Image 1 (tube, helix red, strand yellow):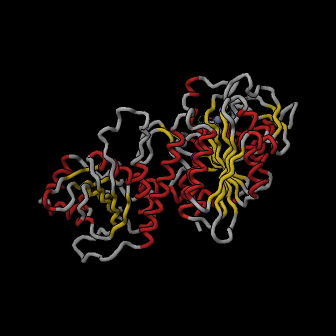
Image 2 (cartoon, helix red, strand yellow):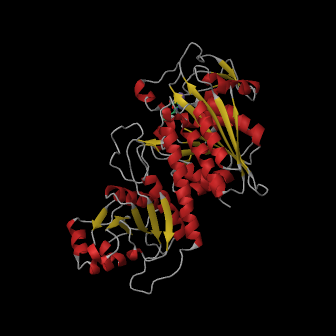
Image 3 (cartoon, rainbow, N blue to C red):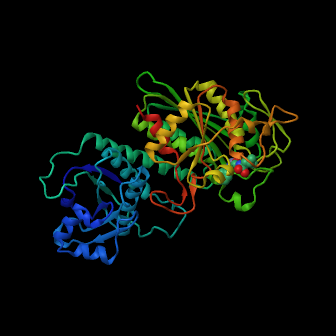
Length: 504
Ligand code: BES
Ligand code: MN
Ligand code: ZN
């Protein structure tokens, strides 16, 4: 799908479908009025017959005949007034879905009317939304999608003038750049969705390494290092290797590096939890909770996919992506309850729950990250606890940090992208829950405050580095399609990681 930005007037478009976003009362919209006049009142009659009120996700399609070059015109509801970034992204997705329904090959999209906010961000979000709205994971559905005809070209128009002298020339350079940026971020998010949705049989640790190598091959600025179990053993990664021991598939630690052309401003390291399947181990999950556990590498998918976009868009920083990939299974070789594992930093950890495995893999990845990349900013993304979902629901990620300035700048990045994130406390009063009578620590505490004790466990390995931990167990995956989010893996955090890594 090609996305272009055009400054010719949208009503002159010859696209199969022209989609016009409307906020609030449709009868007050200048383009609605213009089209209605040209169609001798046919549009307003249809708007009232279909009670189109421009609610978000509503649409109203008219066929203009000879009056316009476009075969169909869809008015897309944007809500009562201009919403946030996520809202604009949803509009792009809704427009795409109308185009798909009408089997349009070309879609012309008029940027929403806004006077207050930055049109470049609108362009970025709409482009991102169109790409996200086109997402489908149907490779295993033998009958689905047979008659599907994807949209080939999308034109985004920024000119909404009516009656006045039309503007000439190309669309603004910055808008063009913003639209390209949106398309790149959308594609990286779709890639992360694919990784999450792919069954664990295929999306296993070795496969993640293959994907990382593929991304490195695409970009001169990116290199990749893959550590096998032997390499990790040499480094003393006893926690990571302990978790993966029950699987017949080898565990791999994958480390990607992006180097900017000029001297790097700072070093940013993004870690992703890469448990490609979490059965719970001997603390076995009940089937109903295990059924979705191929998604336990959503953090890994987010960071690995982000690297592609970061390298495409360019960053002033040196960026590292690290993911320790393994499967948490049950076998004669699996780690046991009561075992004591020795972490890469020497900490001894008593295993009181083999299902609290993410923090073990991440703890060693955090030590590795500090030793090998000396980051100014360290992040981890993990489907870490059900407790975080209980606290914040299915759409919001928990943000934990040992550094006020970094937490603030991260949350500012998530504000820009419209991804829901909420700061959580690392209350040290809960730390005693991790006291062990036979080792330095144990790996799980009580039920209450489970997302916080998991964060406190990770913080032990962070030492003094400025660090942000994002628990995305909730938003990593959704059960129902809504706007730009499809059922299944969401690609959550890609947009914010790319925003944070590429902002000047
Ligand atoms: N991968 C799970 C967390 C999870 C749950 C992710 C639901 C996505 C959806 C994690 O490894 C886990 O099992 N956590 C335990 C921790 C507990 C044993 C301390 C949990 O949340 O129950
Ligand atoms: Mn688990
Ligand atoms: Zn897990």
